[in-house]
Length: 98
Image (cartoon, rainbow, N blue to C red; front, side, top):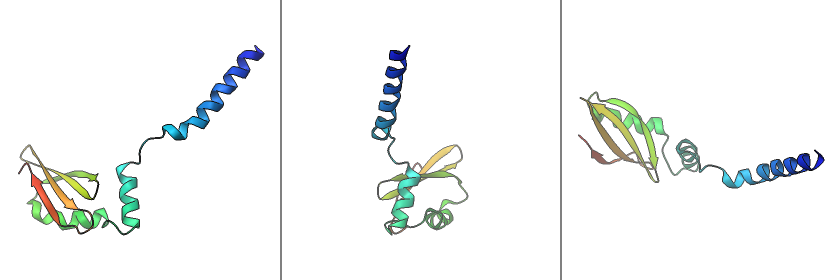
């Protein structure tokens, strides 16, 4: 029984030490927050307010961070519309599915 406890304790210790190495990559929202804090990106709500007037009432479904740009997802008449926006300037750089 003592050997079992020693082995179990060792496995738990190794698992705890190894877990940071197996950590997930940063989430989009974490990367976006860091980019905004570093001055590399406009705040997402500001970008959303810039894009919404150009979308003619399409339903906004949410953002996705893609490196130096955001991809905003909209839905109109059952079709998905993607709007790519430069994260630093808020300028629309592409639109697909319209």
